[in-house]
Length: 138
Image (tube, rainbow, N blue to C red; front, side, top):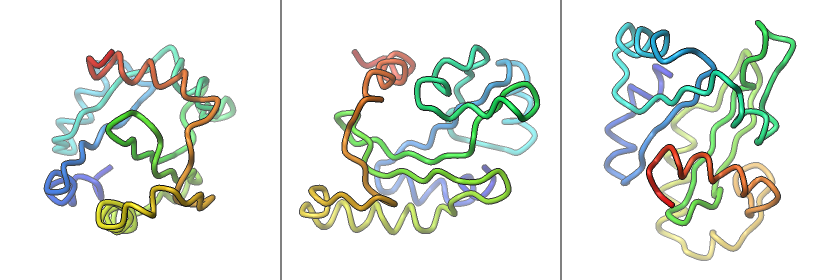
């Protein structure tokens, strides 16, 4: 998360809002946010509803935490970038920013289906309703 905080201004310059989802309580999340000096939005999912909906729940780790993952949602809510990561490694913000620059500059890229970087909306679109609810969009 600190790597994304360090590049937060770069995301904002591209009109991108960084948001994390945690299984922690709002109080624990607020403490972490203050401790790390994080400026971006941190959502709490202590019931793990979003993690289950997106198949990101790791039930073997500390009572059920998220497998690390990075998603970029387009304005319409479609997933335009995804990285499903390991517990010990996460996608660096640099490649995400590079993807965003290419995606904005090249509309044709939006039609490709690169298994690593692009994903067309699929069965998990229903779970985006949770994200839209959290963002106040309906």
